[in-house]
Image 1 (cartoon, rainbow, N blue to C red):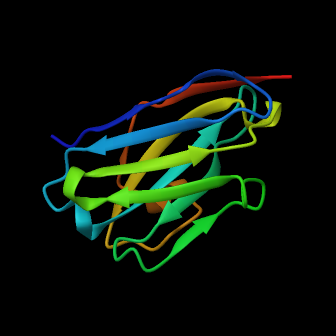
Image 2 (cartoon, rainbow, N blue to C red):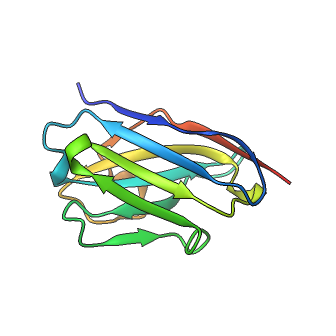
Length: 124
């Protein structure tokens, strides 16, 4: 059974940083493109960042470019999202997702597996 488990969420003040991690129980982790999405209360889920299975490409939503950095460690079946200069509008539940041999898609339906999510709260 595939599991994606997120960690690292919490409450910070604006301007602070958090590092989210997602560990995936995927036997061939290196063949999966990995992404982070977020959903704020009353809003639709939105794409945050994705890294291709080949690590040849990493894409970010315009709203997080220059502040967030996504990386993957295939040896540990892990992706990490370093979030700096956090803003109150970054408050959301952040979920990681996996797509086998997928591209760095921005649509949730392009991903095969999802984690339960971790809460990030940024206060002003």
